[in-house]
Image (cartoon, rainbow, N blue to C red):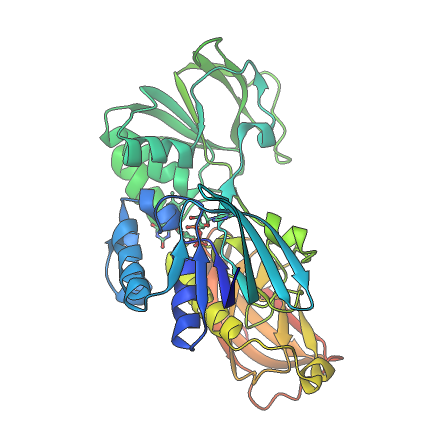
Length: 424
Ligand SMILES: Cc1cc2nc3c(=O)[nH]c(=O)nc-3n(C[C@H](O)[C@H](O)[C@H](O)COP(=O)(O)OP(=O)(O)OC[C@H]3O[C@@H](n4cnc5c(N)ncnc54)[C@H](O)[C@@H]3O)c2cc1C
C-alpha cells in the first residue's frame, strides 16, 4: 500500500487542476480516474467556447484539457486510469481508499482527498415519462458520446426534451450530422441554457424552441416511433386537451445534471439541498476534515474556467491540510446564509482559521432580474454591495469579496441576498 498526501478522485478539468496545484505545493499526489483517458466530460465536447475567461481564447474541450494535462505530466504526477474508486474509509491514520481495476482491488492511504467526480445526467426515469421502453431514448451526453467519440449517429428525426446546454449543443451537432431536429421542448416558461447557446445552437439553425411544453408519453416497441407532447400550466402540469403526437425515432433528454457524490455520502459528508453537492468552506473543504470538493461535484458549473479555479483552490488547501490546530477549531467556521433570492451560494461557509482575505463566491439568482443588487451583511451591517444587470438562473455569477478587517466569529451571522433594482 502506498501513502499519499493528497488523493484526487476524478481526472476531469477539476481533478487535473487540483492535482497540479497540490503537487506545486510539494504534496505527494495520486489521481484516480475510472475511464481510460484523462479529461472527464471535456473529451467529448468537441465544440468551441471553452477557456474564454482563463485563456482569452475559444478552445474546444479537448484543447482546453490538453493544457492542464501537459502541466500534469510535466510535474510527473502519479495517476491510475481505468480504476474505479468504490469506497473510502476514514481512520485515525488517514483515509483508506479502495478501488477496482484490471489488477484487482487496490488500497491506498492518504492524508487528504479531493472529490472531483463531476456530475451525471438525469434520465427519463427521473422525469416520469409514461409509455413503453423502446430504444432511441438517450440522455444528451450519451448521444454526444455516440456522435463525437464513437462516430455513430443515434438519430434521424429527433425531439429534444429540456433546454439545458448539452441539449442545445446536441441539437446543433445532430443537425450538422444530417439529422432533423424537430424541436426543443422546455417545461419551464424560460430556457435553461446559456443565451449564447440558444442563439448559436437553435436560432442559427432554425430549430424551434417550445417553452412551457413537455413530453408526456413515448411510443414504440423495438425502436421509438413517436412522442406525445403537451402544453403545461404555471405549475408545470400537462394541460388536458393540448396533447399532440410527434413522429420521431429519437428522444434526447437534457433535463439536468446531478453532482456525483456517492463517495462524499459514504463518508457522511452533508450535502446542500440546493446544489446537491457537499457543503464546503472558502477552501473547498467539506464538513469532513481533510475531504475537499471541486468542479461539478460541488455544484453544476456552466463554465469550465470556474471548475479549474475551484480545483486549484481545493488542491492547494488539501496539500496544506494537517489536523486542524486547536486555534483553528476554536475559531471554527461561520455559515453564510443565502436567502430565497439566490438559487444557491458556494461556498456555504467561511473558514475562520484561515487568513480570510479575498473570498471567491459563486451564485445563481433564483429569478430573472433586469437590474438587481447583491448585498452581503454581517450581523445586519452591510459590508458589500454590487449592482448587476440581467441576472438569470441559468447563468452562474462569480464574485470576489474582501473580508480583510472583518472581525468574524463563529457566532457572526453572514447573510447574502439580492434585491430587485440598482439602488446600493
Ligand atoms: C455537453 C457539455 C457541454 C459543455 N459546454 C461547455 C462550454 O461550451 N464551455 C464551458 O466552459 N463549459 C462547458 N461545459 C461544462 C464543463 O465541461 C464542465 O463544467 C466540466 O467538464 C466539469 O469538470 P469536472 O472535472 O468537475 O467533471 P468531469 O469532467 O465530469 O470529470 C469527472 C471525472 O471523474 C471521474 N469519476 C467519477 N467518479 C469516479 C470514481 N468513483 N472513480 C474514479 N473516477 C471517477 C469521471 O470518470 C470523470 O472523468 C459543458 C459540459 C457538457 C457536459
